[in-house]
Image 1 (cartoon, rainbow, N blue to C red):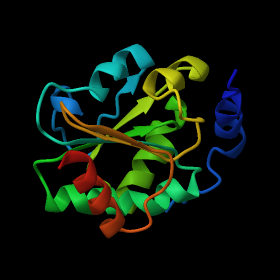
Image 2: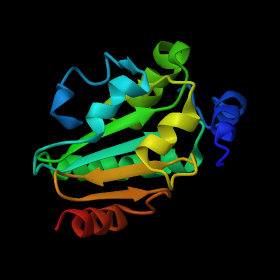
Image 3: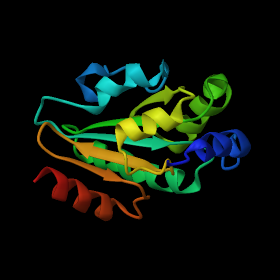
Image 4: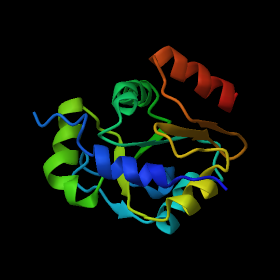
Length: 171
């Protein structure tokens, strides 16, 4: 049996470690990250699938995850250049941190893509539901449309690397 409890422990232990103070068609465009909705997995799951040929990217991340923070600008730049692609950042931070930490963090980093927060303690269940091969490590990205889907349990080191993976997945 896979043990994924360490994700919860890491979230609890390292929350804020890398914090600096200073998708789906169901996700509507709103003022930039003013309303960060909190989902449980059952509410989030429909956003992980589509019947459309449109490209979707869902990235699981947290403020304490250094590799997550490093790759976020690549995702933001990609959707800035490709507005037809829908990006959803799924934060695994704590709901209590939305106003005082998460929103200021996103503003400082220039993240304008849609952000939601996943607050579901049963990580052993939802991690396997998303991808049975996912260990629970962050960052984790899903690139998909109605016919193709890839899972990436790693960080993207450049915009070019992200573009290549998207192209390989969708074309």
